[in-house]
Length: 173
Image 1 (spheres, rainbow, N blue to C red):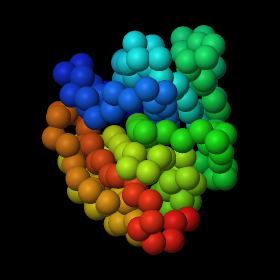
Image 2: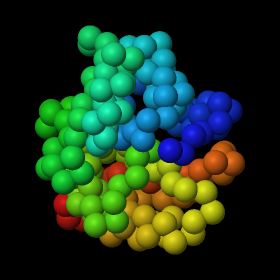
Image 3: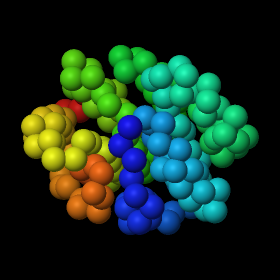
């Protein structure tokens, strides 16, 4: 689990655009403080929030804490599934705090790409001071035609890699 400090959470969540009918998604590793902060932003601004878990115990634990009719849905997913949400719903920001297995990273990016709105962001919370993991993700993001890839230095506990999805920048998938 990569716990973000409260000030890092506050700074990171400033990337969420203040648009009506916004929607956010998170692939969580169980950091309750981070997920609660996202849920609070969604509640305050009447946004939709989909919280995904690959771990069944975390899913069961989080279901009563986060599931809120019309605002937050909590789902148990598998990395290899083709869709993580309804095809009709796209997200402005997709946060990934869960650890995606190496053999699933490329497939995950291909699948999640279709859930991100044009000019939306993917935000990866990665282990701090592990240059290889950051570099591997960076290369995959470039291959999937994400743009404006950069790291944010707001946390002592994790490396934050952010990229933007743009429409019409080549073949996606």
